[in-house]
Length: 434
Image (cartoon, rainbow, N blue to C red; front, side):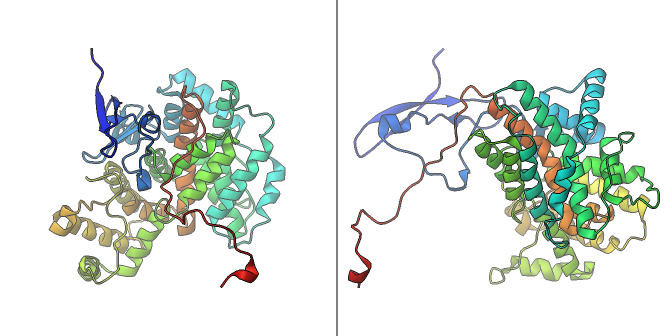
């Protein structure tokens, strides 16, 4: 059978080359342009990589037009409803759901690695009490690489898997210590009698002087939120982890680079921005006024939590988190001060789903739209929102790093550029410059 190709012609010289067309399980076909420079002496220009596939991956697939998100083939709706974050992290790393015995062994390994070195604890004290938690996460995760440097051979499959398990195990510990440092409370050690999310919440909110009672609905909601943020294909932070990892850097340093990228308000910081927006609107009766401002081309005001770089349909994660948000507020605190913010969010969503302005521009609510409310309802301060995002996304980051290291086409990332600077010119001594 003849393979598919696309002919690319340089009209200035008449030269042509045949580029193979590659097809995956789902999604648009991809033109393999590896031979473009050798054949025509050209590169491609794609600012923001909006039409460039940087890798082959079997981890996550999303269809933004249809609102589909699959992890290793499993729909996000099924995973959020029936699975747990720890099981999803296993799925992302290993490619298959675990058997009961495999999961028990995995959970044992995670609990084995969940402590952090006592010397690392001192690193937190180098930060001001009011340092942004994401700054602390970037630094501490990078510092943790120093404890696992010489012993980690990135070409050794056993070493790679061990560092992946260590990352999944230690992220709740680092996240909780980041929070405790900021509020001046003593660090709480992991409790291996608790599950993964229960342990996280205990380390976050327990204090030595009194017992901490876990609310099952809060645990369930946070577990669901972590699942929804576990991976999302080749976004900015995941691509950063892959690019850093391609130099064979310490994997924890590569993860630190991903955390730094996630910190940006256009990426992981969006849920903070949504909550600030809802607080600014203040009351459901003010919604129409702010919607009008967003539509006014002479006003630079933007409604946060609408639209997505990839999704041109309703973000499937938004549906799940919206339901969980209602459940948390109804059961845990029916008279919560967050109720007005929820009413504002619902009013905005209703307008967006009916208003031609939003429909024509495909501005549907995304996962950030409700996640801030649910995190606040769980008692998590706004500055910590992106830390939880980073903790969840670590599962996807390390799965992508593992896949990269096993790729037969592995090579260091080296994007090209279109140079638009000055032509060659001669150096002029400073005393002769006009």
